[in-house]
Length: 257
Image (cartoon, rainbow, N blue to C red; front, side):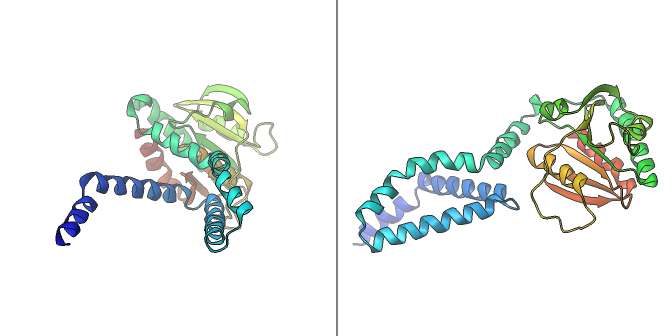
């Protein structure tokens, strides 16, 4: 008896088994982190409830047709899950791609500092005049599809150009400016809107668009509120109001990475 117990314990604490359990736990932890704060949480809860209810019914009541349906629904569920959670799975693959440093590009330090100076100057002037603005800085994830929705510029960024683009009632002011490296690629670009509920009632469509693009990529968004003149920064699906003094170190850190 004691020998059998020791053998069972040895099998239980075998390194391979421990590694197996750790990997499965890590996968579930990663999925929970990935789904946290998204609509997928509610979908996942609904799927878990349905699966548990179906398992209880199949075990307690012998229903031939129902059990046949459950057995043959597994393949359909495996196909449906990637479709349902497509945005979250896409985000996870993008994050894996971002982790490869040799695939990313870095702009020259001098041009980056010039860009940051011009952006900070332009944002401060826009905030003072309460001209609404939305500027998106491309990261490792390409924003070619977003750029194609706007008007091509391919111009060097400057505070004066930002002021001109976002001047009220101009042709390009309604939309986002996309910056790639140290170049302004396009203006009046259309961004995806987040579906999250915003706790701040003063945040409007620009703020939703700023969050939406950062949910689908590693971009950084800078928003100037037309109503209040406040400056906000969005990254990784989160948005934060900041003082204009904090914009410079945030941009420096973004381009450093």
